[in-house]
Image (cartoon, rainbow, N blue to C red; front, side, top):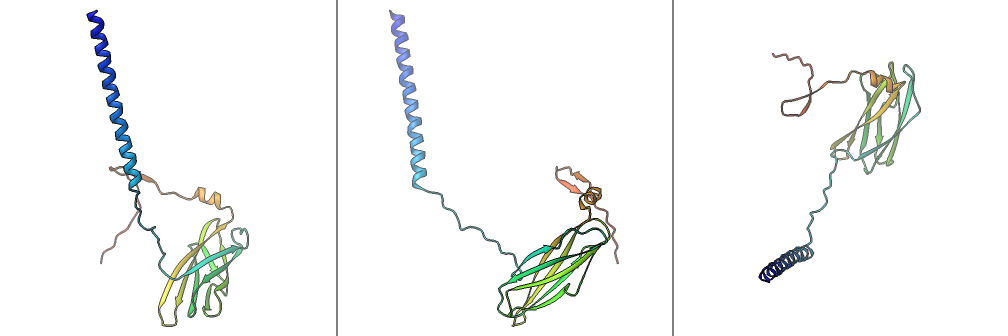
Length: 190
């Protein structure tokens, strides 16, 4: 009988102890929930980035696929919101890409329209991916200049095969675990 009282007493003490622990955990959880409801997170204003330079947007349309050694063309549409001034656009090709035509360098009056179109012709002797670089310079009525650079990707011939054959730089891993490319360099001092 004494043994039964001892077991019953130990069982009761364990139940009371467990009930007390679970009640404390429940109260802690409610306190955290109430605090979260009272103080909503405050966020700062959204981050806005603005690309510096002339406010000129570019759209383009390639005339179609071009084989190596053939001429191709691209129609460029430049959109701006300037009320006055002038826009000069110069097109240049990557190494191996010849850019030509009467409109490869064009001048536009900004007061006449918001959209300006020009047609640029190009040719490359070997297959590959090339870029036509465009430098647009706006000169406002008060003489201030703003520039914007754009580029147009041009695929010549079987460009996928040419890209697969192209020599890729070898990536090495430094002692700290960073990926790096080692390039040959020649230094001259005067």
